[in-house]
Length: 193
Image 1: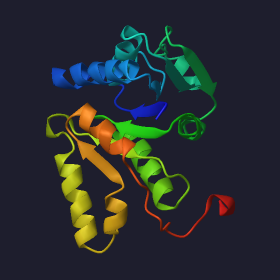
Image 2: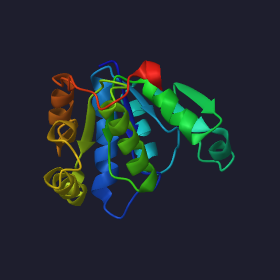
Image 3: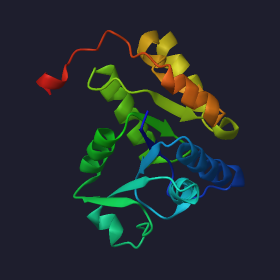
């Protein structure tokens, strides 16, 4: 993997471990020569990931909608900043630029981004690994919900297993490197969308 998109909060959260781990992930990706693609903000966990990668002399590409730039949250020290018109265009561009995805703790935006990437994978629109860095058990309840969805017959086990999970970044990156996408898509192909 040459580049990884990181989805995470634009807030720092109440537990310092989120910030510390986000910064360390950025450093680790830089150390491995993996470009960080993220939402372009200088604040919260987003800023921590970018700063960690930059501290490690890594390459960081931000993708930010114009309307968020005017709110003065844009990171001004990135390798590259790509400005787009909408949130949807942002996700599309981030997908185009990456070989895989990691989600850190976050709120609605992070969930929406993570589940859109999972949905695209389920539909066969991409075959990229998607990882969840489960810092301090942040995503335990979500993982229980996914298990419940599977047990209820609303999510195929094959699709549930598309989401790779670890509480250690090195382990998650190893899982992502070894990932094999399911052979069976849901209904669509990229040509039909």
